[in-house]
Image (cartoon, rainbow, N blue to C red):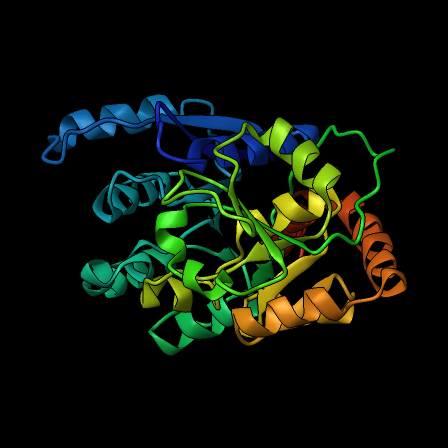
Length: 335
């Protein structure tokens, strides 16, 4: 039995392709080979050409193999459905779906596509889902009961200067788009400093600094050396804030890989683990976040840093991804 995993190529938007590449790199360590899928724009591609394309992608496939599909492929749900139907030509193929994102939940205008995606998910034998919340949501919306593995956290490879220990500075680091943040007025009278790693939306002021975008390798060292906390927060887009209650976020793992304690909202998908492992502050709003940052003692902060460092060893070395892949394969072939 051979095991394969899909990966998109030629996709330049955000961190989507690098994250799929990271998963494939860890999969390769487990002896799993890649099925590369090149992104292109041909929505009305004739079936004959599409079948030929699929044959090329899965040329190494044999009956009895296992295929892990990283979804979405970003070629549309009809394309993904056709791909799975093509896999089913081969007998005894086990199909595992690794859900990175659910497009209908990412923006209100795409919500009408949810039934089509649920139908697509139902074609798989095993699911890897980001959280229990996501699985429960999908079940309530038509997903058939089936074996599943919870991912919990994204991994984040990191090579940083660990001899620099984060310090209890009254700093809140936010890596993301300031345009989506929408809460800068909340820092008007705050003694907690906000550092934003994104495009500036105004002038620097005494307690707000726009640092600008930095490559991941530099970002981790920078936020570690400045210390304080890493902020994982929703946006002024309410649908995206709701999405964060279902899907795990890569930025959470960015901060953890850097060794920084977190600040998260109390409905984040990963919140129970963050509370249980004492990996940071869980708050209801940004005013509460600022208050807690100003009140936390050095000993409390240092304990969080130690907890984060122990937990981050899993994230820095790919154990969440490798565990999810191995468990899914066992459920497909052993259970």
